[in-house]
Length: 255
Image (cartoon, rainbow, N blue to C red; front, side, top):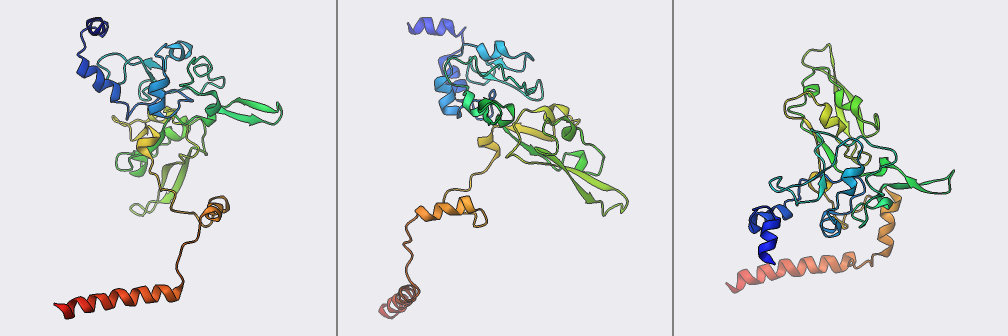
């Protein structure tokens, strides 16, 4: 059985296969993909999503791609996601690796959830300001114009050019709360290596942690209502501080 497995891998060594199966950190998945670890377990590698894609955006990883073999992915610089309104790649998934609920929103007119490609979170977009020519002062807004959510996912920030005193910078700024990670901006970038790139959200974005609360956000601050207040009062706090200082002095005396 193991020998048959080796033959099925077309000569690819088992160690290399395992390596590729784990090399998923920088892979962009189709719309509606569940978290990567769960996706790898759920995806049956059937290729239904790839077949359903009308733009040949999606590919199935093959041995040597340094990606989990048989799983779907796309490369924005090559062929980005065209943001199909009916998202044909998602409903055909038989395993739930692509979840319709993740790309749906409630439609009041129809009184039900409907597919909404703008809910997709395929990746997050970052800009290298040192290599983006718009940050040099050269007029370029191709990524901005390519964005299907213009003035929402990408906006242009106007800034006076102090060096020339005559021109203004038109700097692209990304709002990753809205960006779907389609990659149309990366495809449009004119630099040899794109100055704007789409990466998996887990790689591109930070995570603050639950112990920080945005006091100006009522919904976020409501989380404090469920937290038990275990703070000590001021008098007890002062006593603890004095005890700590006295302990230090006592240690010096003992020495």
